[in-house]
Image 1 (cartoon, rainbow, N blue to C red):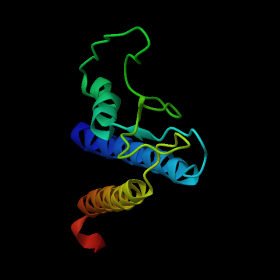
Image 2: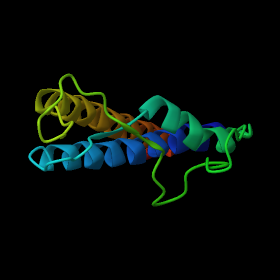
Image 3: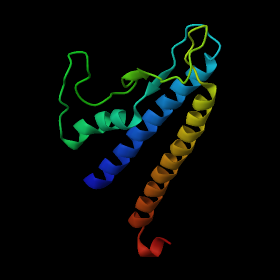
Image 4: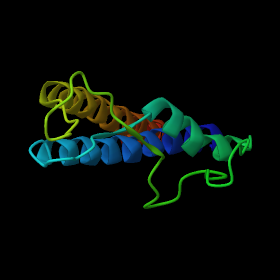
Amino acid sequence: MQRLTQALDFQSQALLLRAERQRLIASNIANADTPGYQAREMDFANALRQATRTASGRELAVTHPAHAAGDLGPGEVPELLRARHSQDALDRNTVDLDRERASFADNSVKYEATLRFINGSVRSMLDAMKSANQG
């Protein structure tokens, strides 16, 4: 049962981070015309590693006092990075709409895949718990 809980916990953490990344990308797109706006990005793999590390029993090595020690709680945001931009704009806005739209679509597909995986896992659990005479 613990393995099942760990697998679902991992997927739920991934789902929360995907939702936060989607919000971040949407914010970048919404501010594409805001002078001086600096596009933000999340290192998803690192954030997921950080969010699931404590749950797996391994502690994070804190290399800077400002870094979070442990997993991300509800409402906590992983460390955000400045997005790399391909060319400088006169208004110092660093949003690349083509890159942001592609990231938005990619993240949407991965969010949906994570949801499908969670739904499939729960469905499999429910089927396994049914007795043979229940159908």
